Length: 358
Image (cartoon, helix red, strand yellow):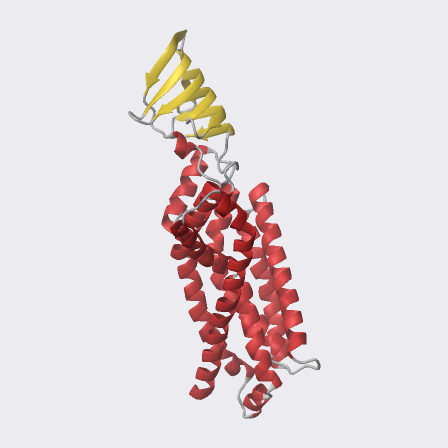
């Protein structure tokens, strides 16, 4: 049976690789055709464009990884079925579970690659991809929060800025509250706060500090006040794609820090975190579905299997996107949003596998 295992395993990996090599150039071509006007208009250097499309390749592959795998397995398994090779295998006494074993070995290899891609390679590519987009292609788009910024910066201090200008590193209507346990010890007000990068200080205008004593309140007022704070304005307003650019350990620490700060984007960050683990699991689920669907020779040939496979793939993407958006923009649990499609399609995989064995 080793000959059968190697035959299917090589076809599994080779077809998946060919699918990647086929669709990635198409994706690059479509993207370049759409962005070429802005690239020429902004006179982007060629090395920057080349690096962007290298990052785009990894980003694009990670984004559509399950679809490429699903279609490739349906494609070569349907060819085996149409050539009656599967019938010959099963007629020789090989069980369907035994026939499925090389597929699972191939899925394990691809899942390991998907895990490596999600934990290490994709974050690095995402950083370059997004930085290029917002530097050259979407110059006027805000990539950070600029309105009503509310953060807990440590165990004792909470700050608020009504409006923030990232270019000037300047905020309006700034307040800082300092607590000792549940007791408010003092509160700082300022019309403006500006970060002075040269000496890492903050310049506050119309500075007011109200100190709360047990029996009295002390009020200090200064027209201009320079001071030090234990935070950087850039840290308080991370880019909305920040989670995608961090390695897994960095991402975990980043989410914990943002939770303490009261960030409103925790759902978005946790979706990115959980998808790093759900994607490798989806490799096994989609492989089982693809084999169960395409291992039977059907009237209409490979086209019927591909049409059915594409339909399932589109439903999977639909579920993944809808629940992801729900988690990012509402109180819907990110863990449920990320794993729900895998649970539903996992049950579908078991059902199809049961009927395929029969």
